[in-house]
Image (cartoon, rainbow, N blue to C red; front, side, top):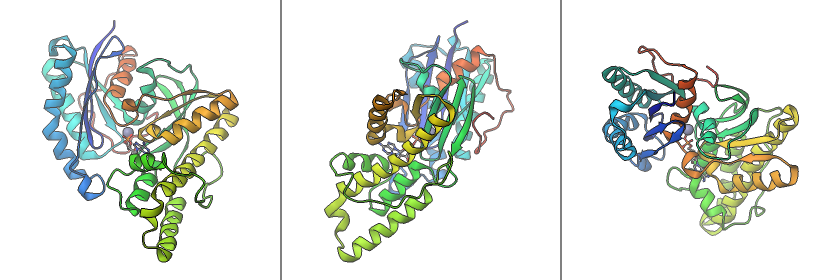
Length: 336
Ligand code: KG4
Ligand code: ZN
């Protein structure tokens, strides 16, 4: 049977709903929360309130624009975690309410696994097994993907996520939140070799970004001592150099992972996979080294419900349903 599923994503600051029919994503409605901008980061209480205000509207729009009536649905899917507890609760409760009212099965989806499975929304789809570098605002993981439902983390950050490093560096330069996309924008007009930063990488497949964050803070402090207008004057070169450094750090780990596993099918996922420097560097390296690389469309990199929908599709086919007493899990791990 080819199911019709409504999927809901509410783990952080995007309220999103998507309808999938027979494995084909019909739409991906996203309401982004702008309320956090003036605070320089996501404020959890404001995020859950905004989800509460938007979820009904977002779900209605997803069903209407897909031309699907509630009675045609076969299951309701939702993000169980990881994420902000108050935000997750809104999506989980809404999904449970719908499932109960419509007498439909529930499907819980792991947000990090869904980022990986975003590669199965469109063609080309990777063959198994493949490696996925999942880079977002909250996570940095190297994942060995054996099939749609079996994946394991083979390396992850021991401190900050790479998206956090981008956003915090941007904040130090007084860019508005989230600063990652702005660093990317300015980097495209700058010289990536203008400045160098210390190597703060750790051995093995795990990542660490706290060292570069501190190094960048001192770099700005020292240059601003000599020239208070340092950031305004050299903004594009600073962004290009920092971005090249961060991209270099994750590329090193990817190369190690390919050598270590012997698998040269490499995918990237998560918000930072939208970074133009990472996308380009990966493509250039792939051409030189014979890797097959998989880069998702921009709309499927940052948080969205289409990735929850595709993950739910495979869970439905495997009859992996959740019980009505399922609770959100803020720290849900891949494979859990
Ligand atoms: O996956 P995502 O939407 O949310 C989480 O699950 O965290 O990722 C958001 C992160 C933020 O840190 C944002 O600054 C970063 O992805 N990001 C980027 C770019 N677009 C989004 N970082 C660098 N370059 C970009 N183009
Ligand atoms: Zn995410």
